[in-house]
Image 1 (cartoon, rainbow, N blue to C red):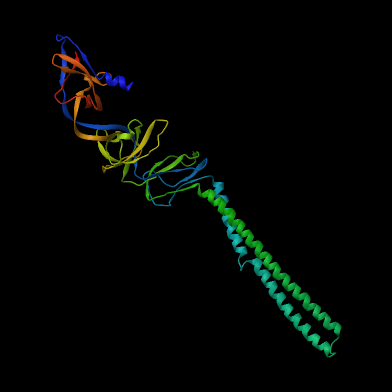
Image 2 (image 1 turned 90 degrees about the vertical axis):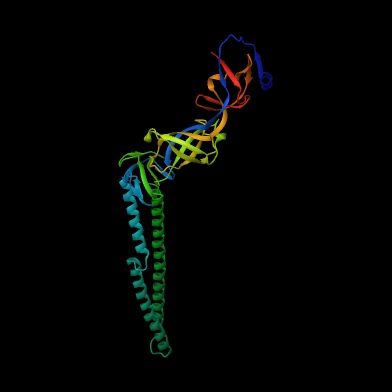
Length: 363
């Protein structure tokens, strides 16, 4: 197919001179080439705080326009019973911690009993030693000495048993404390996902729900951003993306400021085709200092070449297949050209014509 096009590059047509034609002298003109893009103006840094499950909006602590600080609680999702459950678990942890401490009533009672058992054992052990010595001197009977030794042994057993009880009770209370803490931590982790905190110091741009309304999974609840600096989020057709480069100037308009034109500069090209729209996302930092409104729609022209001199011809002189009638004396030649950018009613000619050539079209 390409060979046929090359062979047919120039065809001479004999046209009667009596036929009147409109002519145009090819000449350089100043032109600007741009790629159209559409999108929205957004804060340079912004976040959508979303629900991680389907929940009721229990509390909304801010309104649109509020200034907030990092980690500030903006909204709480869930139900009052879930808050009550967390409070109960918190109280259980506090009680378990108190019971497991050295000063707890349960352990203090055991400590008192251990101290009493030790005192009794000390007395019984002393009596056993004394009676054993007396029995050697025949001052008391061996039977009485044996009874005292038996009393001391029983006292020692009771003393050690209470010590073991203390350790067992202490381990049990410690285990209860750990279980309470684990349950509280697990519930807190789930609950924390329902508490929406600000990730930055910024402004509230949008509140999407009212208290009592249902937030669906991954639905935005609050939009927060840092004011003062804005960017454009635009979509560029896949056929034009190869022309886009970082740093290119962008002229854009938004309905919020009807009739006014603003500037931006390309600073990000997302190299992933969006299959639904067959386009690429491109971002541009707004260089104007105006206050813009997030999610306002914009129409933009990304400048590829600006104010350059190029051979231009009126678009209505261009024939199908990128060719023109070139006047050669009294005859016209159908000549193929390589066209470039289209600028309004004008077409750039990259090759095939020279300045001063005269082209024609039938009246």
